[in-house]
Length: 68
Image (cartoon, rainbow, N blue to C red; front, side, top):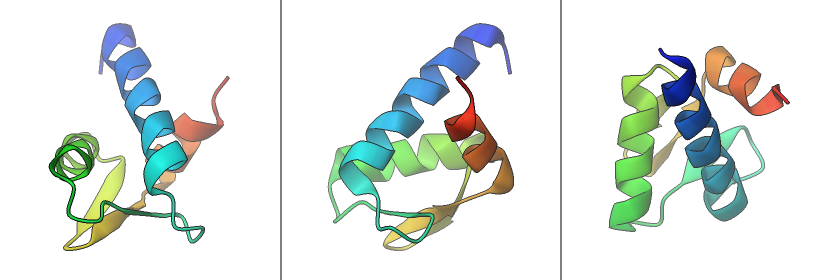
């Protein structure tokens, strides 16, 4: 991924943590289409393992969230 993509994905991941975090390294989109789309995008980069209700952060996704 390019540095620009990484910056955009970091912002998207941070928004997901703020609005969809379930306290178990997972995301719950509550059937909101924007949340479903966000999980799909993050999953396409290998940052989230998707599930029907949302998904779980992968190691790479957790690493991205921990970056400054």
